[in-house]
Amino acid sequence: MNRPTVTSDVKTRTGNVQASVEAELSANGGLLWLAPCWVPRSFLQPGKRIRLHPDDLYAYGLNRGGIDERWFASTTEAANAGREHDEGFSYVIVGNERFTLRDAVTSTGATLIGSQMWGTYGKWPVYSKFFDNMGPIPHHMHQDFEQAALVGLEGKPESYYFPAQYNNVGNNFPYTFFGLAPGTTKEDVRRCLENWNKGDNGILDLSQASRLKVGTGWLIDPRVLHAPGSFCTYEPQWGSDVFGMYQSLVEGREVPWALLVKDMPADKHQDIDFIVEQLDWDKNVDPHFKQNHYLEPIVAISGEGWVDKWVVYGLIDGKQYFSAKELTVAPGASCTISDPGAYGMLCTQGAGTVNGLPLRSPVLLRFNELSEDEYFCSADGAAAGVKFVNTSDTEPLVVLRYFGPDVHKDMPNIGDS
Image (cartoon, rainbow, N blue to C red; front, side, top):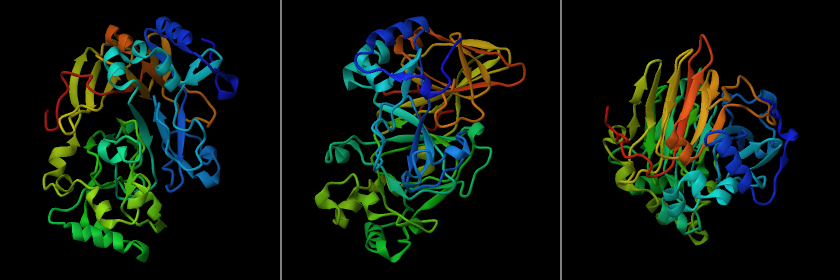
C-alpha cells in the first residue's frame, strides 16, 4: 500500500469532504486513518513516553511548552493560550489529502457516528488522549455542565487507564491525590486559596494519595479534585478542556491564579466563596472514594488466541459518558469484533492488520510523521464487525478502543468483576 509518510506529503482539503469520507468508509469497512495529534502544555514537563522523538518535544516552540499529550480521534479544541488554529484536532488522511475529523463528522453526521449520537449531540462529543508527565500536576477539578455553561463551555467528566506498553517507567511521582480527606472543611480550602501567593498553599495537606498501578484505572466525576501523578495515562473523557487548578506550587513551579479561575465567570475571579463552592463537597470527602472510583479490567468476551477487556466503564451520576476496551490478540491469531457504536482506535503494541489495513505501534515518531497506529471506526463499521489480525510470530497485538455516550447496554459498573 502506497501511503504518505509525513504531513508535508499531504495537502489540506477545504470545503465539503462528504464524498471522500463515504468512499473511504465503504472501501475500508468503516475505518478512517488518523494522523497523530500532538498537544503541548506550557505549565508541565513532558514524561517522554508517548514515542515522540526527543528533538521534537518543543516542536511548537519553547514558549508554548513541551509536548506531553497526544490526542486521539479528537474534534475538541485544546484550550491553550497562543494555540495553533487546529490545535487538538485529529486529521483524517485520504490519499494525499487531509481534513479534520471534525469536518468529517460535520459533513457525514449519522453515517459516521450513528443516528442516536448525531441526533442527540450533533457532534462526536468525546475524545481520548495520552497524558504523559515527568512529575505530578496541580490538584485541580473540571467543572460540571452547569458550571461550564456560565462561560459558554461544556463540563468534563474523565477517566484514566494506565497501559503497560506506555509505562515502562513510572517517572518522578507515580501517585495521584484524589479528593479531600474526610473531615476537611470548606474553611480549610478557603484558607489555602487565601494563602495562594505565600508559596505552597498546602492544598495537598488536605488530600490523600493512591499509588498508581499499571493496567488499572479510575473514573473521575466533574467537581472532584485530583492531582494526577507521573504515569502515562490513557484518558477517555468528554470533549471539553475546562479546569480549575487549586494548587499554587508544584515541584517548585508557580501555578498562576489565572489557571484556577480560567473557566469561571470574570466577576467571580476573586470570589473565594464562589471558588470553594465549585467543588462537589460530598464527592470530595467521600470516605469510600477508592471503592467508588477505582477500575480493574473486566473480561468482556474472549476466543481462541484473543481476549477483549473493559478498562474504562461505569456511570457518573447515573449516566454513561464514555467507555473503553482493550483487545489483545496472540501471535498468529485473528478475531472479528462487533461493537454497538463508533469508536477511536489506537494500537499500543505489536503489528498486524485491521480490515486489511496496516496496524502497528510505532517505536519513535517525528513531529511531522504519520503513523499506522490510529483509526476511527464508524458506527455501521463497528456493528458489522472489524477484523484484527496479528501478523507477528512473537508479539501480541494490543488495541485500545474508546466509545462515546450511551453506547453499551451490557457495560459493567464500578465494583463489578
